[in-house]
Image 1: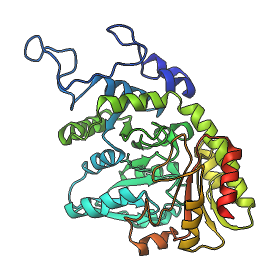
Image 2: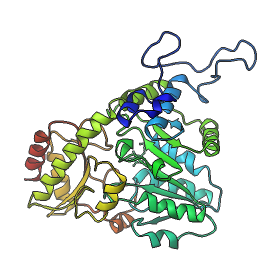
Image 3: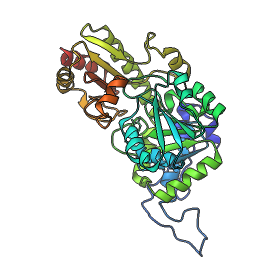
Image 4: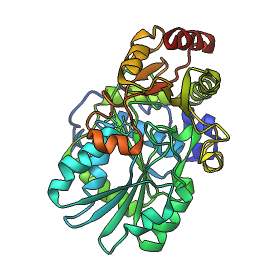
Length: 384
Ligand SMILES: *Cc1c(COP(=O)(O)O)cnc(C)c1O
């Protein structure tokens, strides 16, 4: 695709796209159809049934492949459906090594669904490479990486994970939801599979749930496309259209998310009432150098703890916010605040949660693209 030679910001608009063949419409029509006419059995225009393929979904998949520097993309009904498809590559007895500070739903599907099918999961702090290597044995098949991690904003060195994966013949999958391809393109760093909850930054407007996998390898794509069609967790064409529309403004939104993120992180760090701020843009962040090397900026996700680190104080702060909305999810144009221990990460047992640092006092912010002065004023009044 010629458009793939364009720079990133142009690819968000043109990557993998061409005017619709029927009438030249600039955006692809929302092909609300389940089936496609054939002139004789097997003679069709490339589409047979919309679980297998749909032209609006194809347009989205081509865009995703382009902006993630991949060759192929597969869209799913949700981020979880995309993760589900990746784990279905495995067999009973296989083992997975995963980041320990992990999206709650990912932890849940690993431990409550796939563990029942004889797949074993190890959750390790991936900042410590020897911790990863220690868990590798002949059954290990997959490294599952999330970076920045959720909600503690740790950074996993994707290149280092690739070296370990390569040396041991493992697949490397990276959940790139938090960074978005604007900040980080794991396929360029050697990952085999990039996974997205497009519900977040890619869609960007909190109006759709959708997931995706992006790949370079033809054979691996074929296996995952088989699972996508066989299991059937595909998005409808309207949802595909909404995400495609979101992607077209990804780079301008991300630029503002990053600017506002920096303003909020620095404001919180300077506030004497705040104990700790988690944001990879700080020079004192333990993985700041890795973040600088593999990300183009530091994003708009921030977590923090008040000096009074009780559950009551955290609940009081998130309840007092007026510009920020108290809600799950992230990556939309509006700023959201969340309380991981009782919301996004409630599916992780308290003991496991506290062990990784997700304490009752932790508050997570998804910084939107409002005027930063309004965000700072809102935080100031809620903290006091
Ligand atoms: C939201 C999210 C998911 C799950 O995606 P859904 O679209 O909600 O199914 C997976 N990983 C991360 C990091 C997420 O934030």
